[in-house]
Length: 269
Picture 1: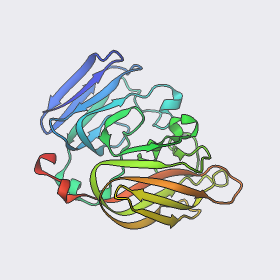
Picture 2: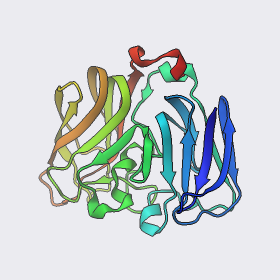
Picture 3: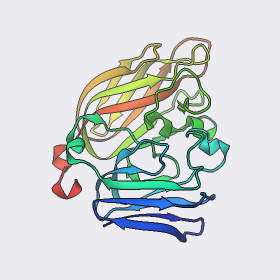
């Protein structure tokens, strides 16, 4: 069995529902500050979840218990659609991921439900710096699947902002081993407000590094690699262009490849 439920700020259960291969929860109330969505599968594995029907479903790895805190306040909501989380009735779903899709080549970094107040599910993005600690510039924006990059405020122009810090680093954790063949970076391209990076480094969990050039482009820039059984990567050593703008930023990072076959077990899918 798998279970979806909503709790309030005191941890009291407001609504819940269970299912076997899939579960649907309809919460017929307006969210309040402190409300949390919970997903508890019977076993660790890959699941297709949708915690908000203005956001596309995502394939995530959940070991035992995933939670998503409903964002409140303008600065916490600004990276989401203005319609998100505001309905008087909410559709929340989870189901076992399609085994064929699990084994297919895809962007393994994608997770629009990631965030500071999300726990227990992967992929997960984090950074050592985010501009003013605002959600508009949070690490999670770089894996939300939204590529609008010709402005810098508000939704859908959220990005990972580095607060002009040359030592900024972005980490992507996959939650399980993956085989990667390509990384794609889409820079924020609100030129001339924005600057850009001319060189960057990718470090991988196997200890290897890749140094690569970047250009002043609005389209994805691809770095072809061959990495096996990787569990995390770090984007680091970002060298800014010598221009007048102090504001380089990242709109999306994609990590293309497949889940490692050695980790795919029948009871996971």
